[in-house]
Length: 183
Image (cartoon, rainbow, N blue to C red; front, side, top):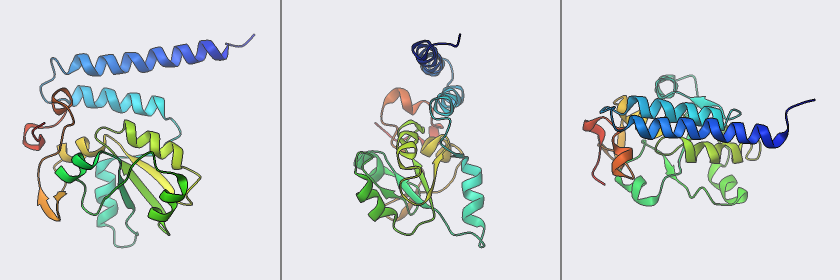
């Protein structure tokens, strides 16, 4: 006799809850936020096992490779978060748009990389878009927080910047102090 679907769902939710609580608890003691961000990344991988993740280092290498077309970057954070700073060239989108609207934005792009603050919202969107937009869809692992913590370029109104909107004071603890904007 196999394990029931209800039991598997309960076990899944318990593990996801554990990772989330571990991430939140670690913010109390981890001044740099690395433990919390890593815990959230594990939660995202566990919750969205079919969403391909791309590490910020790999995305930077991709941009540096003249033999590869750059992916389309979609920022699924709020407009205020996006206006504060974003990855250079990223397009801000509402994650609740319909498939047709996403199709119009994605156009002929063969690859799309979505990101948010830490990767949960963008993984939700990547899961929804995969297989429905005619492009390969990746989530930026650790999203803009991991990107900024690595010291990679950010943009604000077309000009370089160094800080990210943390969306909350607690979440801001996952950013290096130099990258943390004011909430």
